[in-house]
Structures are given as C-alpha cells and as structure tokens.
Length: 151
Image 1 (cartoon, rainbow, N blue to C red):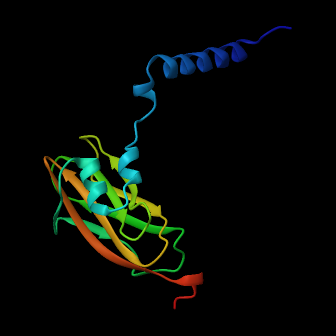
Image 2: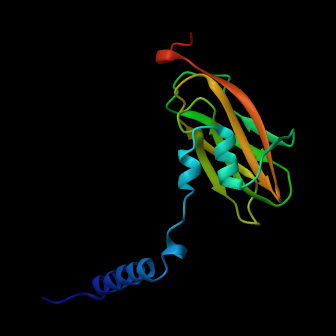
Image 3: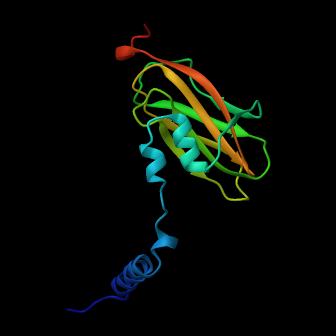
C-alpha cells in the first residue's frame, strides 16, 4: 500500500497536535474555576473566582430581555468602558449554581461579551467585571415564563 504525501502530512499534523497536548497541557487546555461554578450563592462564587468582594457600578452595561419566553436560551450581553478589564462573569441568582459563564479577556480585547444562558426561574442576572484590583457588578431581573406563553 502506497501512502500519499497528503496522508503523510495529515498524520504528522495529528501527531504534532497530540504531542503538544501531552507535553504542554496548560498551554493547550484552559483551566476552569470548578469551585466557583459549584458555589451556591452569587457572593461566594464572586469571592471564589476573584478573591474579593464586588461593588455596584453604572459603568457596566448588562443587556437581557425583560421576559424570557424560553429559560433554556436567554440571550445576555455585557459591555463596559472600564480600563484594563481582565474578566467578565455572568451569574443567575436563583439557579442552583449561580455562575453561568466566565470570560477571560486579553489586554487587546474589547470588554464586550455575549452568550446564551439557562435560567430555571425568574431571577436577577448579575454581571461582574474585574478591572484592576476591583470587581464591579450590575444586576437586572429577568422574568422566565412557564411554557413560553408570556404569562
């Protein structure tokens, strides 16, 4: 059986990638804050993730629907003009595990994230932004309708 150069290249690329995973797992696989995702209160999750308490701020913008007709896919976006933003996290106060998402940003990134989260019931959604040594938050209530019928 003759092996083509295309097949050989594909095999070499696969082996190179696999060796990178084995040799440098911290560079290839991102660590995740398991304890923060397991905490059962927003305050505990923020403290676990950032190591400090938060303070409310009007410099963080949280966009979320007033009413979510499907709690399984609630669109959320968070933006801020704060300088040196390192991280943005989204929490759902009434979920069993409030931390819904966290985003680590590079210095060249815009502090603007969007995602879809799952909400079990009507609750406050909290966005936390880490900028420098401080954590700033903003909150908004999102009503989740049962069965998606708007009532």
